[in-house]
Picture 1 (spheres, rainbow, N blue to C red):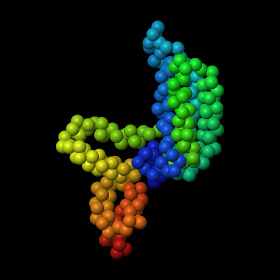
Picture 2 (picture 1 turned 90 degrees about the horizontal axis):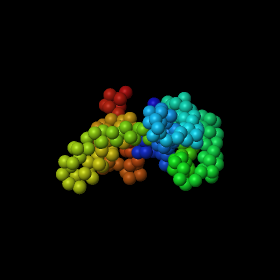
Picture 3 (picture 1 turned 180 degrees about the horizontal axis):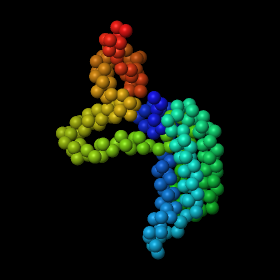
Picture 4 (picture 1 turned 90 degrees about the vertical axis):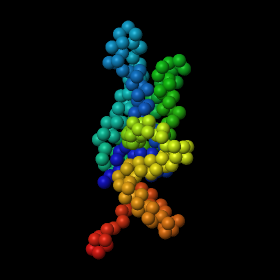
Length: 221
């Protein structure tokens, strides 16, 4: 199975390319300034639609169109398509933003979202060098949703030390789930194996490297 397009930060898919920045957060800042439908409902109280924000949304949406087309492909294939199709769009986006930013005053509403991207440009271009990195962090946000729903339960951890332990275990369990392995099976095998495991081989127990132990039937075969 190919890694999901929404590569979580707790996966080694972050690689050496650095931390990727989520484009959907950057897009939202522009969309607010270019939301024609919402402005129409506000009537006289509507703020003017920003042509620059509208153009930024269109340019970012073009990148998401490519991502939808390559979703589910192997990382190497996604990287090839990004180098072929996304790289020119990203280069044009940066050049356009820097040109427009030079014309804007500090008080312009669209200055803030442009600065947000340009000051973090290395992060927003990281995905071009790694097919495993995604344009969004939706997977990580979905993983945290369960904790948000159960936040009242976390009040009964008993102590600060109990909270630390709960967070530690939750991190292990969610990392296993995000790497498509059974947390219970993984933790059981880790606890059974780690005492006799040489230090040089401990990385084999990490969720993204771990392989389930063979059953007696498989070993006999």
